[in-house]
Image 1: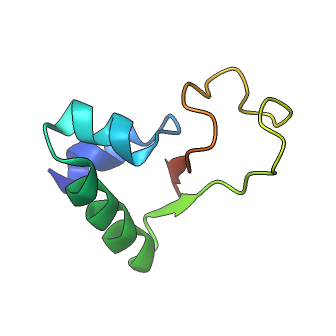
Image 2: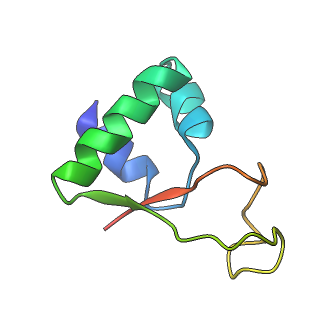
Length: 71
């Protein structure tokens, strides 16, 4: 499951998007993301407060959510 999560994170995703694709609860996906971050495999994208102005506005489907990507 970890490898599949890393493959999915090649494109930035929120915890809820990752949860849907892996068949997990959003809470379990958040825990997985934090574990991956502690190990240096993933990190959250820095986001400004003005949604729609960053470089990821084209893929952002859930404004206000934290997007994660594979490092």
